[in-house]
Length: 242
Image (cartoon, rainbow, N blue to C red; front, side, top):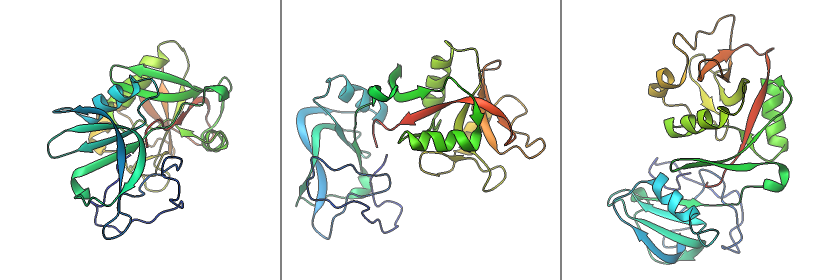
């Protein structure tokens, strides 16, 4: 998740920042504390140049718990890996930095870490079927969200995982708020419309008889929009990096 003020919107804390190493930052929150206090990472002595965020996260995970934060400079594409997030009085231009904070995959609750190339996710696949609205709620009950295919890499990761299953699964996309505008279950943001023809079955989505929800269709290995009364298995996801 990107932490910056590049949108020009004023961002607020939803958590009290008192113990920086222990706090969990929720999406769309923060970087700027006040006029001269910022959050930064406590470095583990590893910096990567001329890279991308996915590779940076992959390298962080390869340190086996020694790294749980990333500071990525979008101008020079340099990435710093850190052990935690802390406060600093060093001013920086937040429009050129992205701050990520990692957390563990809760394997005790049945979630598993899956990887495809440099893309990693923490997921749980249901053994039973529910309507999409109930699947959304069940994932929330598990302190997670329906799997959010916000990028082609994440969509391909899902396809890689589902090779072991011969079933359809709900994912965290729906256009119930505005027809044709698909929003992601993790933060409610809009799916990039350029990704629709790359992810959906040819001719889909077609909103046939008011189809607002989306599942991964195993026969075509693509997405399809479906009606609210359809039941299916589903995939929950926990953020590893937020």
